[in-house]
Length: 163
Image (cartoon, rainbow, N blue to C red; front, side):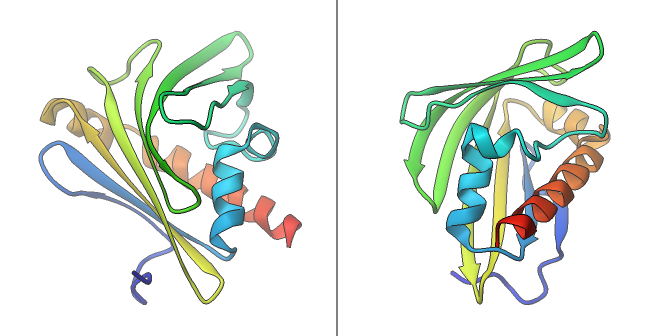
C-alpha cells in the first residue's frame, strides 16, 4: 500500500467511537523512521512531547511480550507510561498496549503503528483504540495533537541530520 497523494503531513482523525488515526509523512526511508521510533539512543535525540520536557527514562524491549517504559520530565513534574509489545513486524508494523502511570484517560489503549514507504517518503499511521468512547473523546479534547505535532517536527528535523 502506498501513501495517498492527498495525505496531509500531519492529521489526527476519529475512526470509530473508540479509535483515532494519527498520520504523519516523513521525508525519510521507512527503516530509518522505524529505528528513530524504537531505538532508545535515537528516541532521546528527538522524543515526542511538548517543548521543555525531556525523556528521562527510555527503556525499550522490542520483542513480542517485551515491555517499554518512558518517563517524560519537566522540572519536578514527571509523566510515565508503560507498554507491552503485542505484535512486531519491523519496519512495517508494531502493536502495543499502553497505560499511563497517572492516567489522563480511563483504561488502557492499543496502538497499531504502520509504516509505508513511497518514493523515499514514509507515512506513519498510528491507530489508537481506547477502552471506551469517553476515553477516546477525552484524548481528542486534550492538546495531545499539539504535543505530537511538535514531537514529529523534531523527529523530521532529526531524520534530516541522519541523511
